[in-house]
Image 1 (cartoon, one colour):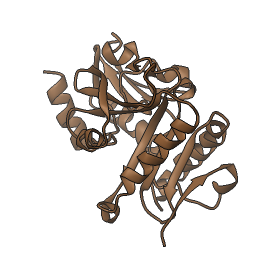
Image 2: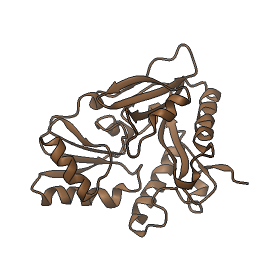
Image 3: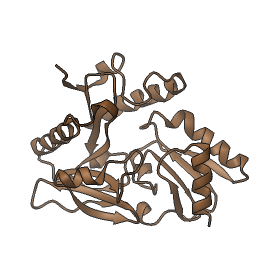
Image 4: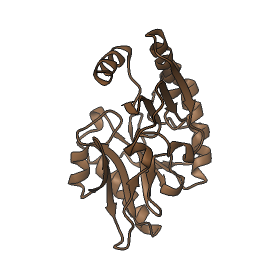
Length: 251
């Protein structure tokens, strides 16, 4: 019978992290993620996964330490919720969210928060699924929605940080990345080099603290590509997707 497990520092050597399964080019990123997790466990992070070789997991932690551009004292913030492929349709997503809500209640937290968009976007949760589970929208910035489920009547409403509502004004491209996503270490430098090859001034910025993540325009927090006061992408892109993105955003 399949069951869920919560990973701890002692488990990181034996269990995969669901993302970047078996892809050697992401070995460095996976190790960076494991090192990052060891520190975050001390701050109350939970990484709960189905005990299978597949992408079925939730990662969340107290908002005060969360690596997301979200202001929500005494709430828990979901970093990632992922149920992929053949694991769909078995109630795993609901089970993971229910666990996080029960954990929030047990800690006396105000509730659980998760960022999404008006429609399903890559690396973001499905807004229809969240509404189905009883989550409501507490804040919005352009297409981005901040969903939450309150557990206490005295809960102060959560909100996105100012950077999500008003991206920075720098003219050149800045790709901000954190070790929270194992894909960043390999693909982010490639994206920056791709932009430079196209004649754009682009730089790579490493996010090394929860506080630094408050300054990015992407609600995903782990990756943010910004320029000219706009959020160009909240997630890493392929060269073809970059071409389409630039054509749309630079009009």
